[in-house]
Structures are given as C-alpha cells and as structure tokens.
Image (cartoon, rainbow, N blue to C red; front, side, top):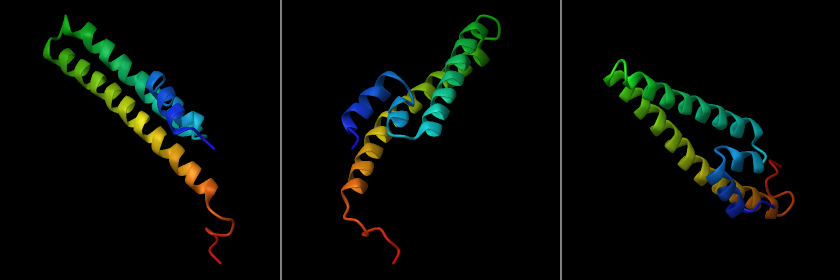
Length: 99
C-alpha cells in the first residue's frame, strides 16, 4: 500500500520524488532531470538578459514554466498513481486475469 498524501508531499519538495516513492524510478528520475534542465535554462536566460535582452527573457520564462509544469504535474500524478496502486492491490485475486 502506498500513501497518496505522502507521495504528493514528497513531490511537493522534490520533483519526481513521489514517482520514485511509488516505484516509478525511471519516470521520477526523468522528471528530475527535465526539471534540472529547466532550472539551467532559467538561470542561463537570466544571465543572457543582460546581453541579449528579449531572448534571455524568453529563455527564462520557458525555464520557469517548465519547472512549474513539471512540479504541478508531478504532485497530481504521484497522488493518482498511489491511489491506482492501492486499488490494484485491493482487487480480488484472478480478477484481472485474462482467463
């Protein structure tokens, strides 16, 4: 059994952490990697704003939006996945059998 609330709280603090808690290691690490790339893009955009102007601002906006989207998606997905895991573990044996 997985706690949906705990999965959501972990994702609140670590992007992809709730997915890792739910056993989706690859998905969680992938989300964490994408978030790190988005952080780098946002930081690079801030640095470029001083030299390039609008391109730097757009890169910063893209990075910030990327992080926010991954963060919100991760929280809701971790919660729902934990609920699904619990539902599957409570179904009677043989219920999901193709025979």
